[in-house]
Image (cartoon, rainbow, N blue to C red; front, side, top):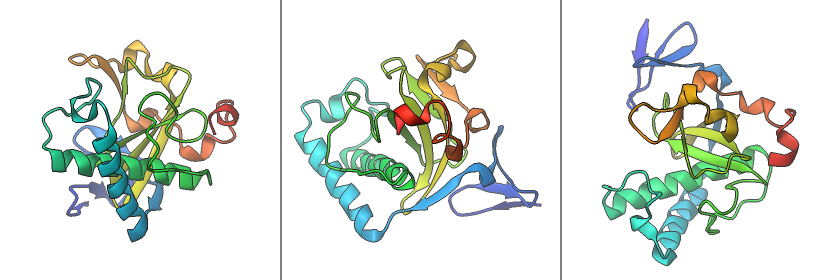
Length: 192
């Protein structure tokens, strides 16, 4: 039986998410939440970082260049929130006001967090991403996030994930490792 919710997520009672042609195994996702106060801090941090940025909305590495200012701030706040839930998952300190933009890892020593509001969304890796980092995909919208999984960026940049029409790589969730495996993996010690 196919069910849906207001966020456009579809599922069947057999225990897996399905949207378009992508499968998402929801029992492999780690559900995380932000408090109301944490959400407010994310929005304030998004405003502060955008106002202080020397490139801001005109940054050439920005993915959605057509967003209006308010929409951009909301997406930035969601991205900060996704980083925060990963830091909370690993019990790591997190400063939402720190501008790390592609110079420093989002979380820990080498974790690059990617966010999409689409529960069945894919992890997108760009040419400018550091190959020694670990990419973690977070889906959903505040206050409810799902840590979908992880993959080393060097592995994500393999030809099989290369997008045919864009200069980046798209990794489906079925190709990600569960977040529970990162700490005990060979990548975990250096990344966390």
